[in-house]
Amino acid sequence: MSSTDYAENGLVLVNPFECRMWDCHDRLQEFLTEESCREVIDSFIKQGQKMPVLARPLQAREGVKYEIIYGARRLFAARHLNVKLLARVLDLDNRMAFIEMDIENRLRCDISSYERGVSFRSWLREGYFQSQEEIAKTLGLSKAQVCRLVKFSELPAAIVSAFPDPRQIKESWAVELAERCASAATRNAVLSAAKSLQHHNGAPLESKQIYKLLLEGRRAASRISVKDQIVRSAEGRPLFRICYRHNDLHVIMRRDVAPPRVMESLVRLMKQVLVDARVNDERRHVNDSTPVCVESRQPRPPHREDFSMAAQESTKIPS
Image (cartoon, rainbow, N blue to C red; front, side, top):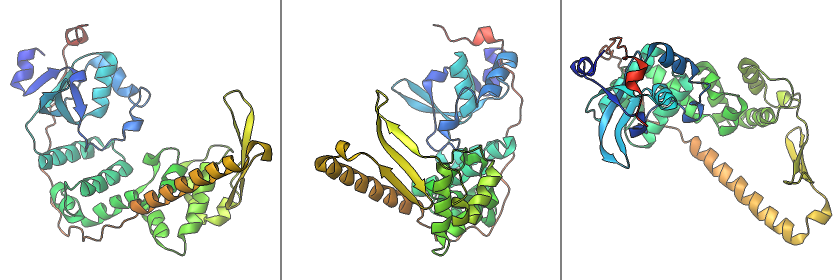
């Protein structure tokens, strides 16, 4: 397809290094790696870019001309291969950008429930939407689905970290775990198991096993295999040992390496870290008491054209 053909279809070839992802995109940035994008990269190499990303123009600032609404993996692949990026460029406001992104995600089915739930909470926190009801109306979702997805953002950091990949947490698991963490009667037991799982040194556990252990609470914590950890200096000299004993954590060091002035500094630093951790954890659990949407409507169908990119050589970015 020639540049003229692209233009007739409302498409342009852009320099991927002059693009940035929209702050509200809902793919977890830390999981955008060469390994996780390998399938897309291989597709670019063999067939070119089959589907365009959605972008909106920016006033050129620090070399950035376009903001990518969706297509994070395609942007990563184009940068990795140093080829131009096929984009459908529209002048969208934030509301339309949210709708377009949600349509794309549901059509492709490759965004996890965890990512969507965390995004919903972020949209509320940043003021893009005033309530869960507004999100539901805008995206055409049911009230129950919005409630369930937001539960992901209510999970304590310890619970999320217990899983090797938070995207593996199922929607029903998030609902159950969030409810247990919200209850004073079960919260500590679940967190106890979660903290033990973070230091698990035995055979790798599947996500379903982790979920079941979290539900067991303290009974599971006592069975999770955790080895002592020895912290060493850059030269390899042992400094202190961290020991896990049921619900307790012990830091053990020789007295001759911890005179009073060192202990004062350690106590001060540990106190500050623990206080900060508790404050951050409490902030994550501020419940959104606004009622959710009671209506449901379907969004308009997305563009489904299958655009093929020209030969790879014609899209190479000049050195």
